[in-house]
Image (tube, rainbow, N blue to C red; front, top):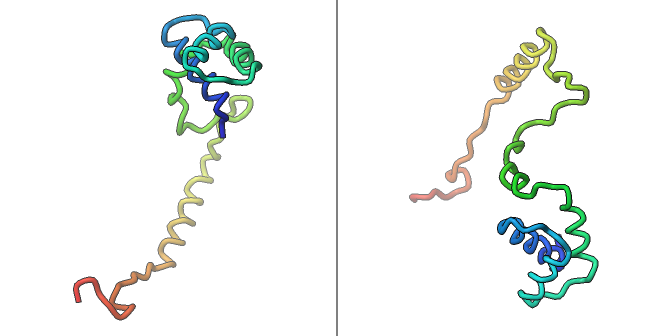
Length: 116
């Protein structure tokens, strides 16, 4: 979990980015002083250094672009199975579904019902 110091620096950096101001240790310290938040002295410099070559605005706007998409395997090789392997796997799943009938539980089995 993030500490208070980290969160304060993150919020300061987001404020600076929103105002299109360069994210520097001095600017982060200015916002922290205005908010009357005290952090360890190394945090503003650390955040400024980490965000030095990063376009924070595009990072935030493209945050969800890769969610739910599987990572590409190394070398760009497709992970799709050979032509005959996929149907065999789906047949096995169908067999398992047919073999195991689902037993339904009801409240009557427990000696009471919802509308009794």
